[in-house]
Image (cartoon, each protein chain N blue to C red):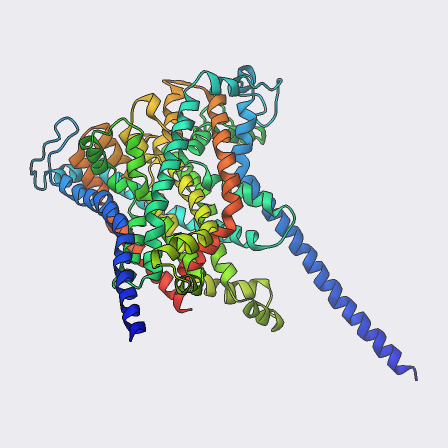
Length: 300
Length: 301
């Protein structure tokens, strides 16, 4: 009897303790994530500017002005192009890199360190480095191409619309491949050894094992890597902001950078909020897909 | 009489051929592996390698488009690195990044460790939903919240102060840290704290004296991860803060080391190396642990 009473009291205390432990996080997240999220929606329907921050209802005025602006449609299109193309290359190179990183070889530690650099370095700093790699006069890439006789004059990477897009995508891919590789490594390491060995004993070669054992088994984590790559690409504005500021002529403008330039640069918070809100449906889709992939992983 | 040796010989020859075949395939596999590994390392670290050459070049060497950009055409110099540390506000930026990062990590742990413990061990109703909610919070990007957070920072009187980042950055670090910690906690056997409670500790006492010390390796991993996230953040730092002395590395360097059209290129490259290498080194030390944490959080149900 005493034992039972003791146990119930303990369970009760666990409940109280549980909420005490959780409360600070819940309060913090509500105050600084949920509230600003609500505010962002509210701002979209207001005439708030940084000069005149009083809230006045403006209805759909901001939406109308944003939709009338061709730059918005260009940004939306660019965001989709950047995300899709980057995602493809991030997964492709990430998969190759993950397979390298799980193998055993000498100097693995050094390779791992070098390969992680693009991801662990603050993106603003590595983008500045790239700014110089893509410099109109001193770009070493152009120098190599000139030495090889492939080009006569410099390419002006960041000065031409298509090359600027390609450059921004390349920097995104370069930066996010290590992350994708690490996520896919998790998948590779979780494959039961005997399954791979069974396939090997049955005479399956490297490629056969890759496509019929490894990839199907680790598919959920490949999906997670792809979606993380997508999210970090389409919500990021640091690369665009530092490399091109959206130029030339808005050819590399994305929703995140356009929202920043309107909302902070131009001080038009209402319009900035409308533009940023367009990130949300894309995000929601990605989030749901990630969760489904993780669920599949759990039932494996 | 003579037959057995012949078959043995044939068998040995056969085995030898098979072995040679596999050995050749093995060698080719190794060569391919090393080639790919070196290519991957070059593609990833190439820009940094090249940054460090650029950082130590003389102006006359650097600003000549005919010069080989991958080698020193004139003697190397450390003047620009010295310039970075003595003539620019780089030390201030680095210091701001450091103390903001450390405070954010402390806040993250103070909120995150109990929250993760509560979600994994205390069987609350709705804790599964909360776990998923936290995951969604992780996916809400700064580019969606920066406008309203900028207004909130203004209301709180924290605009143009580094403290605004201390307040806001845990929104980025907390969800992913809780996720990692849940992974580490799931790997910790429940018996440990149950034994401690039988020995007379309360639940809270068991948490503090038994669970937290055992969780220490995981906590160190979270510290590194959270710090890296704060050091990389760009949008909030750019939106909240404009005075030079309050800036952090990721906003200070691209804005303050570029004066109009004058880029201090060598110093910019040097700052990139000075920041990138230590972070990557520490991160690499803990890579296996991050992987363990994420795997256990995601896979073990």
